Length: 195
Image (cartoon, rainbow, N blue to C red; front, side, top):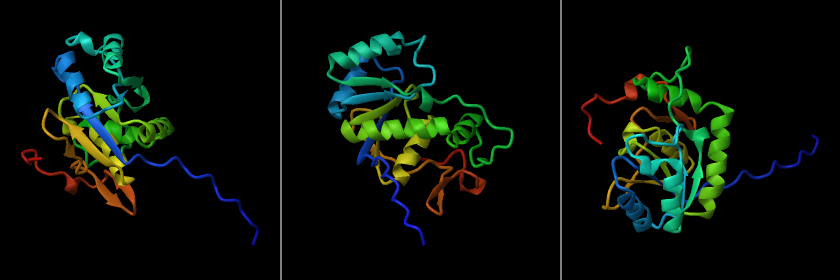
């Protein structure tokens, strides 16, 4: 049998990753949540990083505000939401097309590269991924959190001044043979199910 050199090790996964949604918060409220959780880097996972209604969350003012608080800012538009559902989408456990489209997008090379880049940075700095939606279960941050949780990363959702909540996997997720699976609709709880 020929000798085959071992492949180089993949970058490790971070021990912890945080998530946050800017929602309707003021800039000061948002920065206070980041500093209370000792976040060092804000990874913006909005596909369109801006807000007409809350212009302080547009890239330039947000970048200035976090920089003034000693926090780095990096855009991760390759991890942004608002993805189209494939006509042959297997991810039928997601009823809402926004989540189904994102689950389809998770199978692309662009998504994998974005996750690899986020992994490297989150191993070096306390990192929070950010989008607009206040609660993680209404945002694609939950699907990104599924990926990190599967790898053994502790994912914590910052939702307010109380302690962050640990990620429990999204309602559509199953782990089958060590892989995330969103193809089994029977895993989705009734719409009135609580979190």
